[in-house]
Amino acid sequence: MDFALSDPQQRLKDRARELAQSEIAGRAAMVDRDEAYPWDNVKALVDAGFFGMTIPTAFGGPGHSYLDAVLVIEQMAQACGVTGRIAVEANMGAIGAIMEYGTDAQRALAAELVLAGDKPAICITEPEAGSAASEMTTRADRRGDSYVINGRKHWITGGGVSRLHLVFARVFDEDGAELGIGGFIAVRDETPGLEIGAREPTMGLRGIPETVIDFKDMEVPADMAVMPPRGFGKGFADLMNAYNAQRVGAATVALGIAEGAYAHALAYAKDREQFGRPIAEFQGLQWMLADMSVGLAAARMLVYRAAASGAPYPDPLLAAQAKIMASDTAIRVTNDALQVFGARGYSRDWPLERMVRDARMFTIGGGTAQILRTVVASRILDMKLPQTRDGHLRLAEKEKAAAKPRAAE
Ligand code: FAD
Ligand code: COA
Image (cartoon, rainbow, N blue to C red; front, side, top):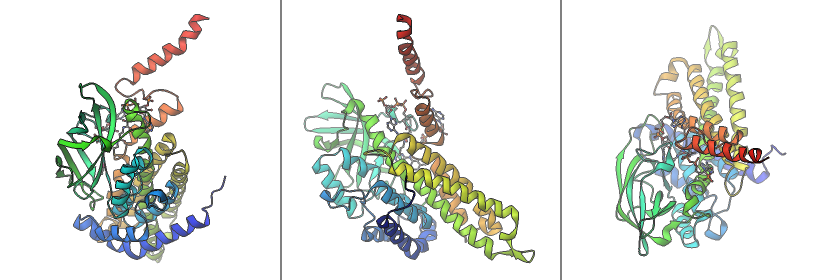
């Protein structure tokens, strides 16, 4: 077991840090205030080779690992949470699924867009299917050489700025028989019927739009269906397996935002004086700072471990554990860092209140804290997810099946 980064990884991390601190950090307050997608940051990331990092060399990318991408995302998030999130979707999620499961034509299309600076959108959540994602009602009906897609997604990150969309939908054949869940590639502005709806007024991470997207008789060529390895019948499981990378990415952004807040708190505690000495000399604050460092170290370890696990995607259990730990830690650490700043922590002229707002998202988006704990429980107990619609039935079936051999003895 080696806890050290390799030399190339250390160089990659140093390069990302230099860019994040010299260019990205200075724009973070403006991105939040203006609620505008940071195209300057996108250009800087593209120029540095930080878009499409996981795209294989055969498709023009550098073929980095998920752990390499995590090292870059962490540095970006320390400087600007929004830019960290952009870096996640530019390297994981939809692009990861297409690179692994897609055809060569799909990979080439996705690589061309992403390497040029498009952050893909992944469209799963619906108004009536959030945590219960498998209950989505958006449907893709086969009509000759196309699929016709109808439905509504909401809370789609990058709605109106992303061009490449990976749309999850229930698939039906020509006769109306349901086949399972699949992913469909649609490019905004080239696909009639893909309509961007209202933008959510969010608490944090305001530089990236979250919108409704409607699909109204959107026609997608059949060869733009991303066929999951086990077919549409196991499509949801295979697509969610690809999604584990994005969960590790979200965990990384939470970690990075918290690390950024912690760095501010450390510096401020050494600088600010009360009662004739730096506030860092008061044990009450020392223990807060110590607890922050412990939480961050633990979260970083779980995030790196998850990123380095599994193939082709991070292991579901490790990804869930990492996101639980990083998102809980991020809320606690950013909140404590704000406390270290006293009244300034509460001022919009200082960065801490933004970091608290940004960090709050990560126990919700990408699988809530409760759902991820359910995922962990199902795996450590070797049970089907008991708290889902038919979880109790499947658990009962499993128990019945396990009981049969004993009955026969
Ligand atoms: P609900 O599912 O309605 O849950 C409400 C509450 O009930 C939560 O606390 C939840 O944990 C709890 N709950 C539900 N079921 C259970 C259970 N079985 N056991 C215990 N507790 C339970 N989606 C996309 O598809 N693409 C995106 O790009 C995207 N980006 C997002 C960006 C942001 C900033 C946010 C906030 C969300 C984003 N989402 C996106 C949606 C996100 O994935 C969902 O919000 C999330 O899956 C939860 O769904 P919901 O909001 O409908 O909550
Ligand atoms: N990695 C790998 N496989 C996964 C998975 C993951 N993260 N999540 C689900 N699966 C698999 C299950 O193992 C199951 O496989 P099986 O058919 O071989 O048994 C299959 O997908 C269906 O899962 P199941 O548990 O039967 O579905 P469900 O509807 O009861 O619950 C949840 C699925 C709750 C785990 C899932 O819907 C979920 O993660 N919800 C959160 C949604 C989310 O993260 N949205 C983010 C949008 S950006």
